[in-house]
Image (cartoon, rainbow over all chains, first blue to last red; front, side, top):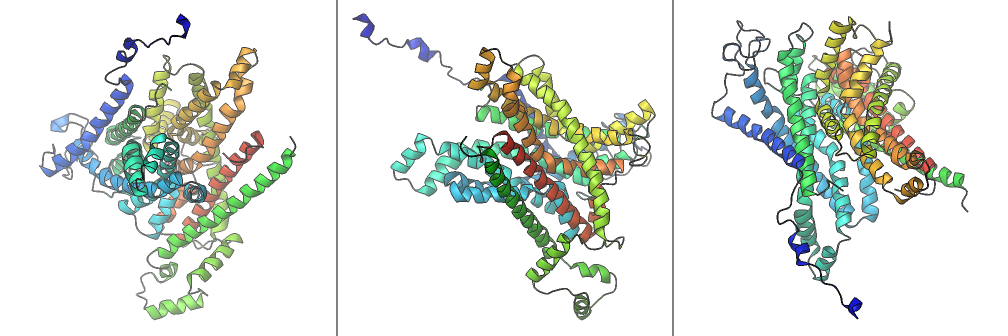
Length: 297
Length: 317
């Protein structure tokens, strides 16, 4: 008769479940590095506000043209007009941050507005939104921005509005996929059965409880793209204009001296761009692995 | 197979063609809307610095046969574009269409070449890491390399390559286009292919797809009976994701082309668009946007065709 007795599960099986979820070390490192880069944004604004920059970023010093790092109190050297590169790098952070935030907010807001109905109701709305996103995706972003610049004026905020609008389809697709996946789960069914209003289900149960991680990740990755775009357009001469420092126009003005062997004035901002974009990308991917639990599948 | 496959393919193809046409019409509407909303009309360029009154402007409009209502303007503009007349450049006074043709061929060379470079680098890496677990020793440096290269500012990367080729190989890559040696083409193509950041995306997506396909039952069966895993996994694991990524990345590559053409003085669409944006040269930039958008649509049409050819019975994703 013994074989008909149901065996009980050992208690050990339950207690061996980790109390604190362990994350991959790599992801934690990614996020830590990304947060460091985000901290630099705060540093830039505080330094600008409380006048704590090492030098005046606009001050021209004709005696110290393109000096190497470390000369005379200029930690990162000076550029072709003798301006302190470190101070210009710190102020340059402000050139991408607020415009980038604008682009991200437009992309997220548009993505939620289009993605939620597409994921929740599907059917014809989803098809319609697919076509809209196909339409927006047809334009190479850079070329569309050049058209807008020609039609209006070269202003970083116009550029970022275009960037935000062209970023909408990606966010909308991500959200609609996620919602489509969620809507097959029991808790949505339960919420409906409990008689919760549709508004509450969508905003609280779907968007707030289940999509906020996704939105944060999209925002972080969007910031990386925004920096790339801002610096590229400033490099092309359409974004932030001299003498206001932006990493893009710093690379551009330093590039004239690059081939003569004066690497530093354009390499310093280029490395800043490289490590900042890297930071935002790593932050986004690390958060994605931790919050959405995608690693090790 | 009761339904003859070519019939299915034909119907699906026609549907895709129709959708492409529809999207191109949508593209033209968007371009027109931006131009329509622009402050000042194209005619102002003719009157630059003449302090023209509204009356004079009106007379010029009438003299040049411009319509008043927006839809009449749109349709006359659309028909002239369709008949190949993109207008005359404000800067040079020459018709845009002829110049656009040569310029877009140049850009096509650059983008196709760089796409090939990207695939040559990315596909082996992706397949290698997919075959093994990507936590394997080589996986980490490769992932890091992917991250670094996708964050690299293209314009600075270009200068480094120029510097290296001048001082290392005594070769000046900017001399002129289409000229003396194939190296003049190869250097910009390499820069765009390696530096545009597409590589890491290709590696990531392809690796994910390939890992998924390698875990499918039919691949396991193939492996169990000793058949070639490659042969079975190729269509779904390599061909489809690669074409999909290429089609999705065309706009991105065209954007990168703007910068690379600027660095290397490559006479392509990107450089022309840059010049046109500086001069507010509407007809030129409008033509470039339309051509670039049709490149993108052609790319995704080709991708859909591959998709249908691989699996005629799955018409929709």
